[in-house]
Length: 285
Length: 265
Image (tube, rainbow over all chains, first blue to last red; front, side, top):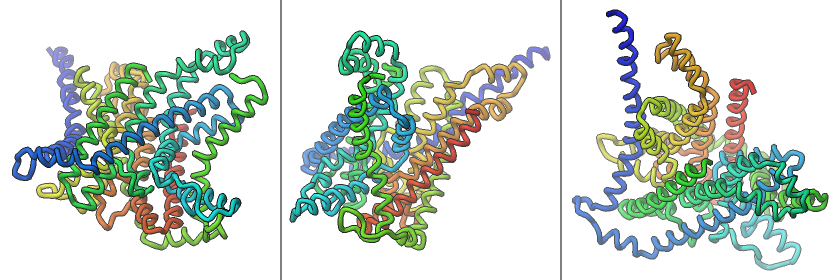
């Protein structure tokens, strides 16, 4: 009898463990999902609780929204493409043509993940701004009357800054994938007379594809959501969806418009997040 | 080794140095230089000065250093507790629920931070939960945004942990609470430290949600840097950015050393 009680006791004690998930889940629900639901509610219903289709249609057809959407998509696609190219070139050299200190350099690039994104924009102002180092140098050398380099306050300035900030997110999975590539295979191909380009194409790239897809979709997600870089560039023509939400809510106090745009921005982000999870799960990155 | 010829390697290394120099080294170097620049009208500064740092330490900017450190510490501590709690209790759930909840805990990292801030403004601007204009709403915004990363890091650490230790402890009669405190958490410690470090770094650099919700008396470093540069005071902005970078790096390096000592590597 006493034995039976002793055996059953742990089972009873384990029960509360199952409900242990409730406090953190409730916290998440209250602080994240409840506000998210209110954004959706404010986007679709007006103050009296009636669906406000007219307002949604007006926002979706407005010039400021379409411009922001086009800017967001252009910037994130271009920046992701840039990250993929730069990340691949850097990873190939770091992994297969290493130099003294390349391990340290790889770690240094890694720490960029922890630094705030707007730092790069601020630095670019000093480097490529109208009174920056590059322009002053060119004006001095060629005695030009006006600054010749003028890409910083455009879409391309944002793209270049985002490439800098998000390349580490490609580099990290790529280096991990490359560390698993069989060096013997590369050396054998090389001894048999294969040119480096051919080895990269036929041996290394196939191994890199999963990391490129997963890293690329993560970059797309992060660049769609990027705020600091665009805010710091401060160019009037470069308004993305997050910047538009900030402008409508804080500067114009137009919360309903901000909520409608936020719903679209969130839907876009969650779609990309799904893509990333699918790619990462499928490819085992 | 992929390229055997000496010249081929040299060409690739020059290419690497160019990309690395332009994209990564130059921005950091130039922020450092500008934070020390007296005046900067040509290619290089006219002179060097530590005046910007002195101004920053004297002025209201010092309050933003404090605001950022306190916000980062509290939000990261809360995220660590809730993320660890969630990751540990998720192990006891059935497979379907585990997958669903695991996904839900990750979603905050995928939502644009400006929208997280907007949501908090919409939700907590009226009673019974009137938080708009308080310091708490800044903490909450940071907590929400970093909680997914903490949860992810701790879950990943937990997945790498061998279940043997816990099973042995359990078979020796250790109760769940004792097992958690004396076996699981110590084994998990390096991952917890790493998670805390990453959360803190993310919180220090957070801008999107903070700029939506911050009250006048609680201006974090990134917001402060933005208002300085927006006003045209870019040298002070650069000095404050250097403080942010150094604080973040010192923190990360320190935590890395603790982790290294804990894992004995």
